[in-house]
Length: 117
Ligand SMILES: [Mg+2]
Image: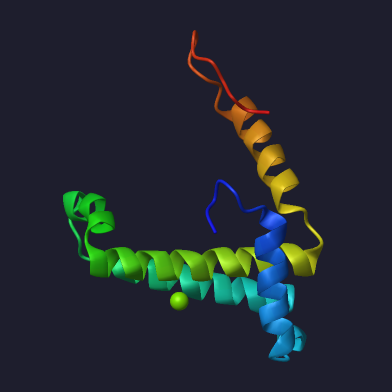
């Protein structure tokens, strides 16, 4: 699986199936998922805590740190997918809509080509 070839829907289906087979759906309220998301973001922050800015840039090239970053990034993403599912919010549509809002709020510099859909 890679970002280039995997639709968001495939990730959402996989994480929903993972949770369903374990009987976790009753616990996956939007409130609980948001709390879990904050916890996982905290775990991601912990990987970078105390690193200098240069060390944080290099962390992705360190095998041990790279694995820790990937693990926590995946935890964050999986909970985002679950939150999208349990709120009925289409993630791709929300991302595109928010980029469009941000483009209005933060206009591209004059002469720069904006790629916002
Ligand atoms: Mg985690």
